[in-house]
Amino acid sequence: MRISYSSLDTYQTCPLKYKFKNIDKIAEPKSKEAVFGTLVHSVMKFIHSSNLVPPTLEQSLDYFSRGWNSEVFPDELEERAAFTQGVQMIQQYYEKTDIPAARIIDLESRFSIEIGDDERGRHTVSGIIDRIDKTLDGYEIIDYKTTRKMPSQDKVDNDIQLSIYLRAFLDRYPKEAENLENITVSLYYLKHGVKMSATRTREQLENLENTFLGVIQAIEKAEFPPVLSPLCDWCGYQKICPLWKHKFAETRKVETEEVTQAIEDFMGLRRQMAEEKQQIAKLQALILEYMEQEGVERVFGEAGIIGKSLRTTYKYDPEKLRAILDPLDKWEAVLKVDGIALKNILATLPPEAKKSVQEAKVLDRQSTSLSVKKTGASAEYSDEITL
Ligand code: SF4
Image (cartoon, rainbow, N blue to C red; front, side):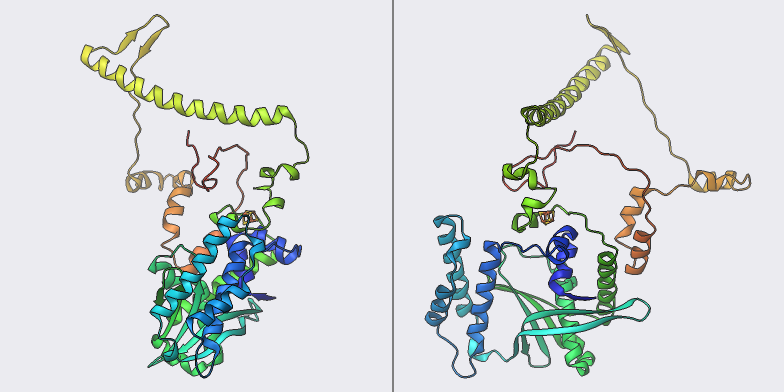
């Protein structure tokens, strides 16, 4: 399979989005964030492309203004805010960077690398590295980011995009594999003027290949479930996505007052149930306290009698239990996989074992239920009302 890094990344974010884009070939309307990011990236290339004298700040701002596309913004206010932000990013870049001193060896560097083997299948991954610099004792591979949210250092230490860029770099300069500790991979957050850097080990690069092969296998198995995440806000396929399309009245096939009312009533009743549950817990605490004070086990009201009952749960010592049941050949019969315990240890397993555990998963049973999420203020994926 030939696949670009960005397609692999799309699949990891949301397999259904990958399908819309790469298999169904449905063109995605460019989001304002994507258009803004592309322009800022081209300004960065403009700043560093000159072999002689780099452009002045004014020239770079002029380049930015000329590339500006106002059509992607819904209103003037949003457009003005984005434009100001772009100007500030460029100004800050000039303030913080010694531009003539940068020792850049390549910009927007295209790569195409082979991964896999005869057994696991051979695949080609392609992509573009924003920038490669020569440093005193090695190299620095830089990817520009225009997002506001910055990741934790741990995420940068394990970022797959940076790892694949490094792998591509080593394909081009294989001798540098001996100098791995002096090759830095960096994410440059232009909005904050902050660069977050890390290095990679050989082991990390080997694991990267397994991760990618796993993603490619899933794509080949045609597994394309939608995955709800904050990135849905930037997805151009919301109007055809089963998780979102109902939000857009024009995409609804059947619309009746009865269903509209049922949706409102359902949410209202769920809210009411949650409130009642809280109220019951408060009343119960009050009555139990009263029973304690009175020294009684039951209290009498006009509508009935409330009795206190003690619920006790026990657990068994597994070693002692095994010693009893094993000789009777009954031990295996009481063992069953504890899904929660397994989930808890999954993150601590080595990648291969983790993958094998995932592959050992078989469908047990399925049922459909409804959950309620608050809408508005981008809370549609997070604030589930727990009942
Ligand atoms: S809206 Fe979200 S869930 Fe739907 S395709 Fe896009 S990213 Fe996936």
